[in-house]
Image (cartoon, rainbow, N blue to C red; front, top):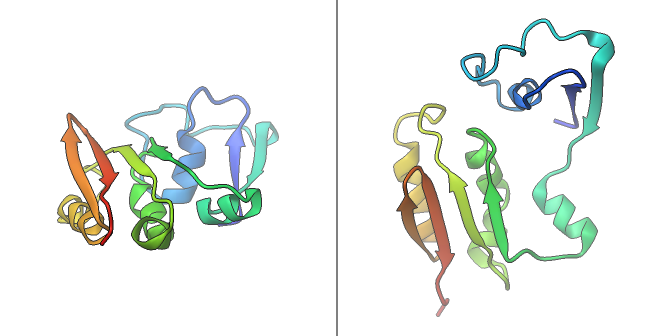
Length: 133
């Protein structure tokens, strides 16, 4: 996806997020439907890896509150988490209602494979990089 249209009139981000995920957020937001085309603002999208590369920076902490899109972001940054010289702490809200069956367990395996310790804190997952041999 190269861009997302957001409504300038919307009071929630779900209309834009819905375009990226394909998930139905209508339960969370009533203003997704009926947004006027003339109030739309188009925002260019870049992947997190592309942004970090272009900005020539590394991150210490990744906090995600992206309504079920965590899986796609984690897939995209696997090389950073599993083998990067500087691996960030990762903290995000779990959204099991949007994940396919078994996905939450696969998240724990993913972080274990990347050398992270995980701790569930309420509905969130804290992932801390462990020293690599």
